[in-house]
Each structure stands twice: as C-alpha cells, then as structure tokens.
Image: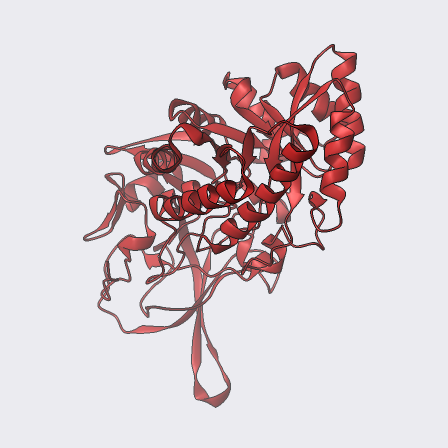
Amino acid sequence: MSTDISHGFAPEIFSSNSAFSSELTIGGVSATALAKEFGTPLFVVDEADFTSRALAFKAALDLHFGHHAGKVYYASKAFLNKEIARWIEASGLGIDVASGGELAVALAVNFPADRIQVHGNNKSEDEIEKAIMAGVGAIVVDSFHEIERVARIAVNHKKIQRVFIRVTAGIEAHTHEFIATAHEDVKFGFSLASGAAWKAIEEIRAHKSLHLIGLHSHIGSQIFDAQGFGVAAERLISLLAKFREHYADELPELDLGGGFGVAYLPGEESVNPDSVLAELSKVVAEECAKAGIRVPHISIEPGRAIAAPTTTTLYTVGTTKNIELDGGNTRRYIAVDGGFTDNMRPALYDAKYHAVLANRTSSSHRVTSRIVGKHCESGDIIIRDIELAEDIHPGDLIAVPVTGAYGRQMGSNYNHLTRPAVVAVKNGKARVIVRRETVEDLLALDI
C-alpha cells in the first residue's frame, strides 16, 4: 500500500484497523474523540490487531513445524500490562519475562505458570525463588553463578526446575549494536565457540535439582530475513548432536528467540511470520537430518513484531517555530506534549519514525519539520526530519504509529512528567487499560 500524499497516512505502518478520511481513526474511534476523552500524550492500542498478530505467529509455527512446534512466547519486555497479559493468555501463547516485575504482572492475572519462561542476565535470588515457587515452565540460565543459584534454591524448596541454556552463537546480526545479542562480546549467555556452553551443560547435568530441557538463542532485534536464524539453528543443532553423542539422549527443545523486524517508515515491510518460519523449518529439518537427531520442539519469542504495529501515540502540539539554517533554508520545529519519556528509542538507538497530522486534513504546503518533545534536553527529538503541513499550529494532534514496543515500557518520569495512559480501541469503543499517572503518583514515594 502507498502513502496518501495529501496527509501522509501510510496504511502499511498503522495498525490494521486504522483509517484516514477527514481525520485519523483507530479501531473506529477518531483521534479527536480519543484526545478529548483521555488527554494526550496517549498510547492507543488496536486490540483486534494485537490479537491477530499474536495468532498469526502461533498459526505459522504450528503450520510449518507441525508436531515439532513448541510455544510462541510473547516477549513481554516489548509492552506489558495486565490487559496485554490477558490477551496473550487468551491467544494461547506463552510469555517470557525478564524481571520479577514482569513475572508479577503475569501472575497477577493468573497467567498459567507453566507457560511462563524467565529470562535475564542477572536474576536476583529473590526473582529466582519467586519463579520456582510459582512453578514457571522454564528458567533460561545465563551464567555459571546462576546455575548454582537456581539449583540451590530449587533444592531448598524440594523442586526440580526445568532450565534452558542461553547460548551465544557468534552471529553478527545486521542491527544496531545495542540490540544485537548473539555475537561473542555481549553480556548474554554462554559462548558456543569458547566451549562455555558445553561446560554449562555439564554443570547443569551434575545438579539433581535441575532438568535441562533445551537450548536457547536470541541473535538480536529488527532482523528482516531468516538467514541469521538459520545459522543460529545450524550451530545449536550441532550442540544438540554433541549432547546426544555424549549422553546417549536428546534434548527435546530448541528456542530460537525473537527479533523479527517491523516496518517503522512508509515503504518498509515487516517480517511475515509465515514466510520466515517456512524457511526456518526447512533449515532445521535439513540440519537435524545431517546431524542424525530428531527435530526438537521449536519455540520462538516475538515481542516487537506483535506489539509495535498495534499502537499509535497521539500528541498535542504546544508550540511551533521556524529556525533559519545555513544556506537560507528553514526548519520548522513542532513541539508536542510528550517526548523521550514516552519514546526513548530515537535518543537511544537513533530510531526513525513517521507522523501525520491526525485531527484534520491540510492543503497547506509541506515543509521540512522536526518533531520535538517538551523536556529540558536538546536531544529530546521524536522525529528529526519529516515533511509536514506548514499550517500545523498549537492544538493540532500529531499521530506517531508503530509505538507499541519499547515506548510506554521504557517510559520514565524525567522532568517529573507523568507517564501517559494506555487506551485499547475495538469496534468503535475505547477503554483505559493503564491509567494516566498523576502528580500524586509522582509524590507517593517521597518520604
């Protein structure tokens, strides 16, 4: 689908139930109505789109791996609250958590503990204990210290804990350095090349309170082809084959992680679950046949690919100004009522976003613009360069799509701003699923 040049609406990067006529609507609710009822900044989640994306990954995994399909674990670090956890549970997915707080959210809505997988490179003893006592399906161990801790705590509670080993497969995924996680020089997991992964297997096998069920790999984020996943699968399958040869047994599971890329700008394309899993299933089958082992149960962990495209952030314009540049050019600054406290990714990763004037159409000339936040930082830039209508003025609404991953979840209270509400829309109705913070919330922790 192409961008409508009259107002910049690009259907391919907005949630599937978004449209633009005289103004932007999401899930049948207009941007004006949303802003009037709930205020701005505002995260607007297209509930039906979220559910359909979750189900698409599950259907693709089941289709291409058949009885070898494991679980689709939703990577909750992307976007999590109680209602999101309920949607994930109802869709039949598992959930992966990377902290005690994320685990608490899942347990608060009675998410089935056996469908919870616990991640993290530095799990505290308290987090490990809570996970074991809850009966989580698996803990992904990330260091030798952690092997000892999980084993000891499991013994204390007379439990046998199922664990995965996180393996760094030595792959340089084509992504930002900060979100590449499987080359050797990172904080995550056990190196395959150095032999640390095999040593971890041996140590786990020595503990009667641990049950090693498989290997885990995550090669990074925003990956748009199956090649990296395929190489990771090939290398981990070689480790599975070594395990079978040494122990005369086979590990039943292989988790290939997430990182499936999504489109943020007009003209870009998101990873298609069906295509990438079809290609991956061929690689796994071929490599297992070469190694002479059974195909293990394959699991994946999409987070961004489910959450990001479902959500749009609405802002209200506060001020505009024109800045004269060298060479006689002008840049128009559009300041909105949010900023990097609700979207840290541009500052952290130099991430690029799109935006539209959301409350009306405009026939005004389009000019080079910069959308900035209200924080006392020159780096508080949401979109560095974009062509927008020259007549945008205070009170107008700006919509930024694809903000469902690492927006609200990375939110902060810098400058003592309150964090935005999250609203779910479906079939023309809107409801709050996370209320807006208040000044009283900000002061509540002060002694």
